[in-house]
Image 1: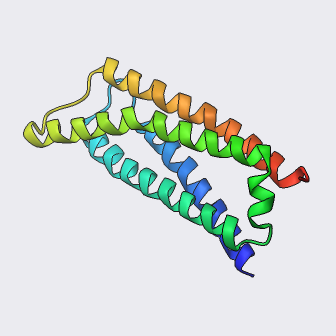
Image 2: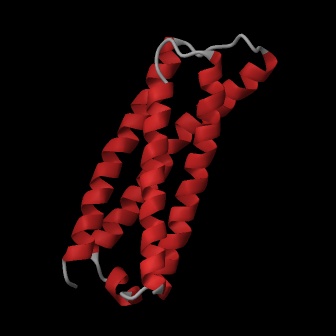
Length: 148
């Protein structure tokens, strides 16, 4: 039962992460408004917290799930999935730093809105995250189906 509960939580968190990345992508665009900055900052906080929860639940699955460490530790696809997760984490840093800068600027100047160039640059980082996320999901599907 523990394995099932951890798997359900893990998958729901991943779907939540994808939803937050999509929401950020919809808000960050040329011509965005100041209130969009406020929203994207809140979503990005949730994005980071959700990524952390995914990592914690994933570790719990490794050590307390039905398949155990041997399955994961010897599985090439698992390590590909971990590499993708770390790449996504790295790719999320520039947008997060930009969002924090926007929030600070907006506190000092409530009329602040990002330039179209800034928004386009952040969107590019989010597209990279999305592409690596697709690869991560391919690794996850392969990991679950390929015996090791």
